[in-house]
Image 1 (cartoon, rainbow, N blue to C red):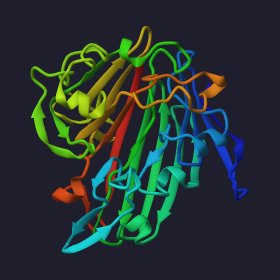
Image 2 (spheres, one colour; image 1 turned 135 degrees about the vertical axis):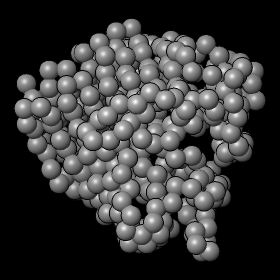
Image 3 (cartoon, rainbow, N blue to C red; image 1 turned 90 degrees about the vertical axis):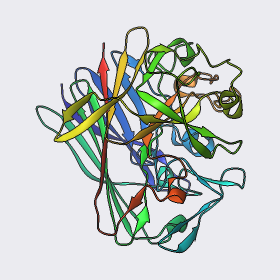
Length: 349
């Protein structure tokens, strides 16, 4: 069984239709919305391993960017501004009126994406989403054409991010899925599951969650170079744990294990394991934001099938450039240069 189907998922307040595209083979079933490119469900070995909602209202009313594509800039930019080629660009300060977060007031997570392709052949299923972001949208320079390709092949589920701008700009695209390898509807906090992140350093942050510099993971709660329970050190009285109320930090990949995937060289970045399902993460992005999901509020709208929310019900591994990189001369995209990065989730069960 290798197929892709399209169904109406709901309507936005302005009447625009939101469709769900279900990619299915014998191992994995992924449901993707054209609204925000959201991964609404990801069923692996009979378990739905991502948090999400049954209807569009859940995504409109609840915070958290669940399953969505993030852009133009994933993560935070200090003070909601950056300077590029001598020009200061002012962005929305949409996080407590002090930082710019995940693309601003109306980021890519809140857009209807054009479905350019939805097809299945004997080996894989492909869903291609496209979006045009005009010059100065949310304060960013350049007319930007974005293409995101979801591919399902065997037990591999990948996301390829491509883009071109007609002006020098900054860009950092990712996906914000919350994973739980025992199933989002299990009673398990992800703190009971194991995680490895192959990174020798992580990025320390201040009380606004803006980077202050890199530090060694050696001897800290941030040492995930070998698999350990996610909750093992989360109660440690370390300043960096306290400032973020847990893990919400950038890790800089340093591992030297690579694979070739669809013509690209991807680094083995992380692995997350539950009782019966393991997810291996590969990417050509230099870093990942590990967010343990401590901000999931039990009093918020329930997840799919009316499953109550709880703290750390799901965690994020957002492949990326560092937070606030535009203020440090990084994450720059030259005019007419192609942005092209891939993240692969390889499941084992």
